[in-house]
Amino acid sequence: MNSMQSSKNRIDQLSDEAKRTTLILEKAERTFIDELIKDGKELGIKSLISKMLDIYRNLMIYDWNFPGEYYFGISRVAFVNIELINLLIQNTPKEKWYDTGKKMGDILKVSMDATIGVDAFKQENWNAVFERLCAQGFGFFCLKDKYLLLKTPFLNEPLIWEGLIEGLFGVKVETKTLMSPLVFEIKPSV
Image (cartoon, rainbow, N blue to C red; front, side, top):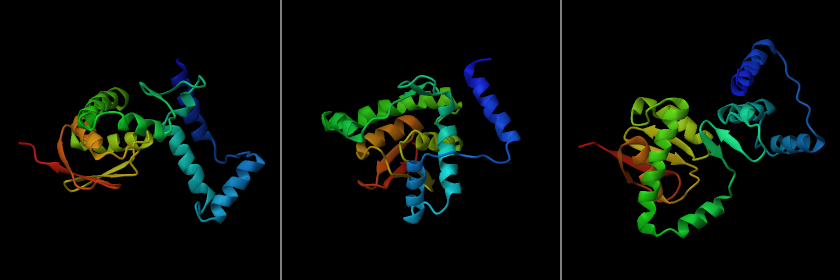
């Protein structure tokens, strides 16, 4: 049995057996959590732990075996300052931003199909794609009628997002806002 399957089996087995869990935190960690609660940023520890566990599961952290080399499905995960990404964008001619985003969307479509087994061109699969994109740090996506909303995007350039969305979801969009939350109107296919 490979390590991913055995890790997953251990986690499933533990969740079936465990009724209570004890977390032992360092003093600095306890102080940090207490400050979050005191400042009203985290009203209860249960939701904080719940969020941490969601991130742990969604990013498959239990499968990260090699320091500095983290994989999420078929994709390697890298923690990068957004300033570095913005520097790359600013040094790319603006007329290439849409095409760059489109290529990113094409790659993400293949990744979604390979990792979670969904065709991102099918709107019934969009929620699963939105969840994966959120877990990967792209931002929070939601669909409202004919509008695709993107809250807290990690990139601020609508032209890149326009290309990315069109490449990933196979739709034509028109940008309606230039700042977060970004709003894209989905155009009817002709």
